[in-house]
Length: 155
Image 1 (tube, rainbow, N blue to C red):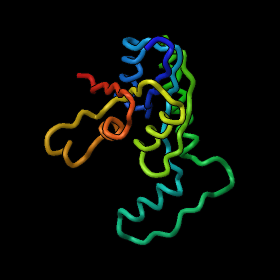
Image 2 (image 1 turned 45 degrees about the vertical axis):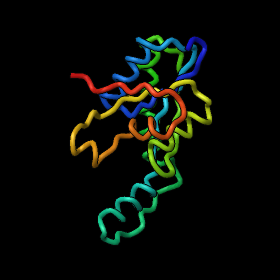
Image 3 (image 1 turned 180 degrees about the horizontal axis):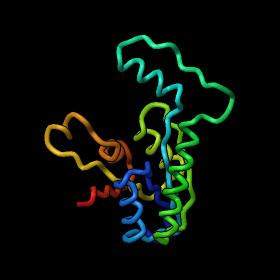
């Protein structure tokens, strides 16, 4: 894959940090994009209201400033970018707004950038829990037509 472009999914978790480390150790690429998917607070509030079954007043941002979720995503993404650069990867950072699901944002970003491989960590759930709760990595693998490197959690 020399000369290729990889997308590294990064959410700040230990598993995503491990994915960055493995991408640097095992994949030769000229470029990478570290992507942090984020969901606007207004959508998070609406989703949480729907999940609780209790009508809650519509959440309205306090001012016209930057969405706090976007601000957090940029901080998280900067951390992932620093890890990628420290791992010897020529990388840039990007935040992808999530309009439906995190995995969709990652797959769409991979398609937009026409990457050669997607790298992601996983929670590593097993048994009944894995049947009830698919991970973002599982969905990326099933719905992307690109190679996917899934890095399991460390021991």
